[in-house]
Picture 1 (cartoon, rainbow, N blue to C red):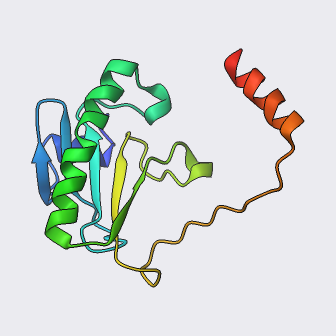
Picture 2 (picture 1 turned 45 degrees about the horizontal axis):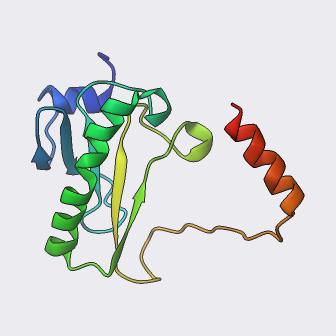
Amino acid sequence: MSDCIFCKIIAGEIPASKVHEDEQVLAFLDISQVTPGHTLIVPKEHYRNLLEMDAASASQLFAQVPLVAQKVMKATKAAGMNIIANCEEVAGQTVFHTHVHLVPRYGAEDDLKIDFIAHKPDFDKLAQVAETIKNA
């Protein structure tokens, strides 16, 4: 896509701090650096997000995640990592080209905040939702 910033990075039209590249995937440092070493892994073929990808293309993308994540962990000496893929604006996606965030974590005080609010389980409702998903 001509107006996609990640497509422009892949095409070499915009500079990026590349950390890994193969025929299908490019990994580079996120310009925002939520934490030091924050890296994006993107497929070279344009897809809006993971929900558009076929299984083979998604497999090629995710096959590189452990390799790049291990390199980032080794280089940054981070204590942990969040691996995130936001799909659509409501989920925090701001660039509409599939990408996986590798966000090294150094401690509770770093700049990434994710809160999962636990709810008391309603097992009947869980069974209903599970059945709906299975049948979709």
